[in-house]
Amino acid sequence: MTSRVILISPAMNPALRQARFDDGTTSLDESGAAAARAAAGDLRPPTRVFTSPSARCQETAVALDFDGVAVPDLGGLDAGRWRGLTLDEVAANEPEAVGSWLADPDGAPHGGESVRDVCERVGRWLDIARDADGRTLAVVEPDVVRAAVVHALGLPVSVFWRLDVAPLTATELSGRAGRWNLRVGSALTAGEL
Image 1 (cartoon, rainbow, N blue to C red):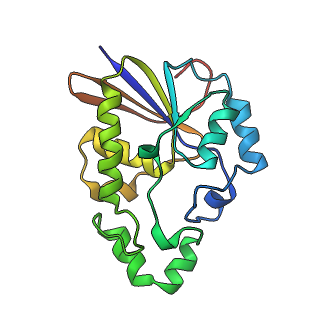
Image 2: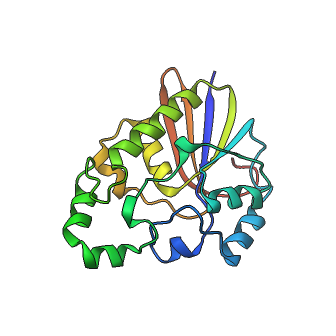
């Protein structure tokens, strides 16, 4: 049995445009919603659909014409007291903390989750998804896509920040016999996924 997990990154919203630590409540902007609606119907019907709990992921799923179940384990990295701030604002006020956070996968100077923590949390979900028959589609935050790729390929957690995830792209993992294969960053186009 081969299991397929297609991870869709959310469409654009103001928090993504501003490099803001989203608090999960920021909606898609009109251009992001329009881009997602334009891609609706481009994906083959999945067996099941999940989303990150954030507004932008849930709204992206709806715009893609999917009814997804929000799963807490698919939530974005908890940025603690940095939520709502831009990366530039945090870097101006806490440059050493930002440097430590970006360099140390175990660091959580913001009081939230470390990169290692999010990779382990998403990895546990992915291990369960690997045992599910059929196609799983999940509209998730970019950091959840990064964490899934790190886990699936057994990469060192230190590469997390070196994985770029563009808005409204698909990353496909296919699992069989206890391992995953990866198709990275496909554009949402008819019939390919």
